[in-house]
Length: 476
Image (tube, rainbow, N blue to C red):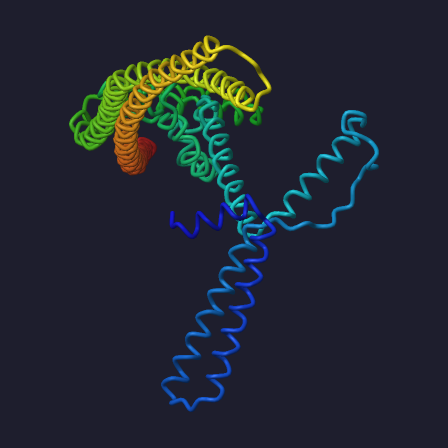
């Protein structure tokens, strides 16, 4: 600090009246100097370059003053007139709950109104970020709470061949298929066990295909018999009834024969039709296996990263604890040294006052007493020097421990950065996994569509064969 500055500060504290006179003199001299400069400028002849330079300097001064004014203004709080909801005589502890609530809200409003617009915008942005974070957490909690429930409406997909080709059921199956196949496949929730697709049982093996054909033909037979029974009720003649029953029996026998022929003749065709379906089933199984492998890899990588973070943070935490303990011990020693120094200073002051009084003649004592006092002062000074040395040692220890703390903080910051990088990598892996999951879902939907098309082709081929056989029999 310069000598003039220290002298002025000392004058301000010790003799404020003299300091005020000095300030007044300086202000008057500065005013006089400015007026002189202004007069010289007005009287003199100047070039255009000098005038421009003078104006730029003036503008710079004005801009600097304006910026400084607004800087001070933005940091200040402004008082706003807010009407108090309660009487000023009542204290908060004497208020009722309703009055206290109103009073606190008015105080909050007043505090908020007194803030600058910069602080208001900062608070608003912070609140918005906090609310968005809270909203996201609530949404994630709601998603994790919701369990995958099995729906009975999946059964609509397992309609018979008659119903699938019927115009009455076609719009229903179209509406239900995309809505409930996701629940049947159960891809969204990993907590519940995997379910097989309801349409997969139709195309699993050759035996199941044959069983399905038998069931369909049996259903057709039942429908045929029901129609004939309704017709028999309308007919009153017993002869016709007998004839129709015999015809029905013949048709039944013929259909049984056709069933056997169909099962014997068409295994080769069924194999050809079932080949693409089996390929699709294998592809869907491969997709499921890939999904499981990806999930296992993700879990393993996350667990490894967490173990690494724990191993890295353990030694740092132990070092921090040791440093904190040493800092506390050093701080206690420093406090004790300060207390001893204060006591010693008080004793020295007491002795100095006694000596001063003795010099003035207020105390009358012998030479021995004076010598004792002087010795006591010397011992106190020696103790003070020793304590000063120990205090310096403690200061050096404190500095060393602070430096160690800084090193540990830097290590912690590096660990935090590494943690952030790991989190970023984990987020990228999750995003890749989600994208692959979406790809697998799209592949599965394509497989479902192709399976439905093949099923419809099979059903239409079977019905065409059955109708052609019927026509041949009736023509005979």
